[in-house]
Image 1 (tube, rainbow, N blue to C red):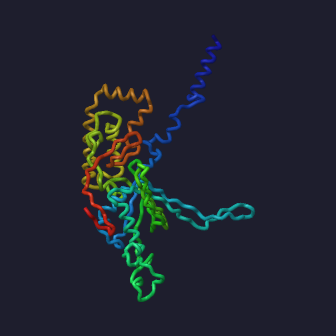
Image 2 (cartoon, helix red, strand yellow):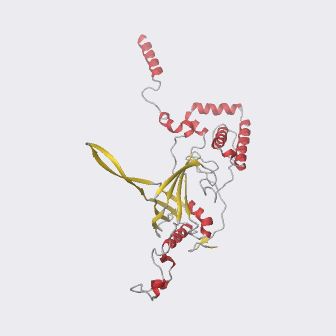
Length: 365
């Protein structure tokens, strides 16, 4: 009996000094990503926005730069983030190895676009190609058989290759924005130029969508960060976007629950997020948005019964992983209807009139 009592005391002492024993559960490993409302949670690859900005002073295709330029940004399927390589050399400093930088290289990145049925991506390349290369604008007479381009010959009336009197760049910038937790990190490529372009490949035996790919070179990278909202970053959520709040969201009414999407805790987090970021007082629309969220959150809180609060509290305490549902914006963006990692819900948009850009940047119905 004494032996059992001694073992009990030893076990109690060990539990007090080392409550986890020799093995800990999975929650220990997730604390880094879960603590402080998922502040250090990894970014998801699908939450990004890329924007090509054409220099309208150089390109006079208003039919394209007015609307289709923003639509082109929405047709980007994937984009590499900037890459860097330092030129370095290892020197001997009294037998100590010393690394010295000689320069930096901005490695080209690849961007893939959908080959859309309206021809918007194809039209951008046609404008770019015709802007830098004179060959695209030439009639058939410019390619008739001749040995030399000599004075007083018909071929002397045409320009070829880079002989196109171009001075200003086609693109002002190319920016890629990664988004998470209502914030964005921006990477702006300075003086970007297209190095390679591919129209993809046709195949009667294939069923997947066709893609256009380009390789971009650039001279430097500028960084930015900020709060995501409509048209911030520029052009974001301005076209083909469902701006009507879901009835399950806080702004659309929410639900009378403590936790989960559209619940009371979700509403409080959204309200305090607006206040802390300054969105509430930026404009009348921002003030009204926060006010609507506050009213809906208050109504949902009043709709909670005591039994419901007890039930949800017991559910959280009996299974600690359920606390993750109390914060519904793990990958969320204020004012944007994006699916989180656990959801596949998407917004809808009305179908605009279809206009086909022609080879000169104009449009055909």
